[in-house]
Figure (cartoon, helix red, strand yellow):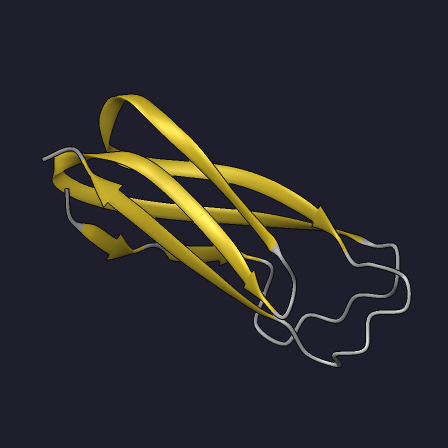
Length: 87
């Protein structure tokens, strides 16, 4: 199966969060053969999650969340979104 870039719908670019805040992550993707899986990862934290789409959909959206750890040293985090097609 092909891994594609998903579209990060939220949070907004340059959104600001504090220690202990819960960040809502929304990932979207589309594929003519169907989207079978959505995933996100946070660079700078060991945070990742996957959502299986069954049956695969032509357009899929997934919602995830994670908490900003108290005492986090990094001043910036990068959230990346991925999708896997059904082929």
